Length: 371
Image (cartoon, rainbow, N blue to C red):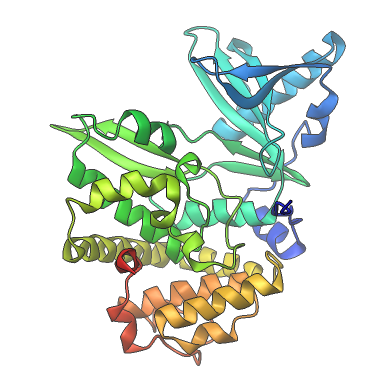
C-alpha cells in the first residue's frame, strides 16, 4: 500500500516571529490551541443533507466550559475589534467543532450575537510557518485582507465567507445569475495570483466564491481559504488551480467563452495590480521575504524540482540559484516586477541580481492549459 505523504507542521522561527511582533500579529492570548483538547465528549457534525462533514462537535466539563468559552470570546474580540470588550456581554459561544482531518487540526468556534442571532466563525489552529507565510502573502498581494493572530504555537484565523468551490461547481455553475465572462475573468486572475506567489493545492474545496449583487449583475470573486500548501510542493502545476481535476468542469466551462488573447489580457491586468500592491507595501513585503528566504518550508528535493521547472517555464537562470522556497517566491515576484517595468524602484534583493529574459513575455501560466 502506498504511503500517503502529509505535509509536516513547520515551527515559527525567530525571523518570522520578529516580523509578526513588528506588525502586531503576535499578541498574548488567554487560551492556547492545546487547551481546547480538554473536551470530554464529541459527536459527528452532519450537513443539511445528513452527510458527514468530517468535523466533530465537542463538549467540555461544566467547570472548564465557562473558562474556555470566556477566553474564546476574548480572542474573538482581539481578532475583530482589537480587544474591545464592550460587546462581550451579548456574545456567546454556540458551538466548538474539531477537525482531525485537517493538516493543522483546527477548532472552529461559532459565536452568536444574542440580540439578533447573527453568527460568525473563527478558527484556532496549530501555528504552521508555511501557513502563516501564505496568510501574510495573501494579505499583502491579493485584493483581500486577512485577519489573524499568533501566540507561540497557536494561530487564530477569521472565517473566509463564501460558497465553497466544490459546492459552487455542483450547484451554481450553470445558474443564470452567474455571468460566464465575469466568472472566467476571475478564474484567470485567481490562477495568476496563486501561481505568482506559489500558493498550492487550490482544489475546489480550498477556495470560496464570493458572490455580490452589483448594479445589474452578480459580481464574483474567488478567495483562497486554505494556506497550508504555501510554497511546499515541488511540482509547478500544483500552484496552478486550472490543473486540478475537481476544477476541470469550471475551467472547461470558462474556456469555452474565453480565447487566449482575452485570457492574457486578464492575466496582465492582475499582474499589474499585484505590482501596484507591492509598491504600496514594499518595505513590509521585503521584510517578510527576508524572513522567508532563510526558512526551511519544504524538503530539499522539492526545492530542486520546483526551481528547475520554474527556470524552464520562465527561461530564466535566476531560479537555478535559489536554495529555498522563499527564494523561489522572491524570484517569481521579481520576474513580475521586471515584466511591468519597475526593476529599479521595486528591488526585492541586491540590485546586482539577474533580470528576467525577454522570452518571459512569451510565456503565460494560462497558456499552459493547452500543453
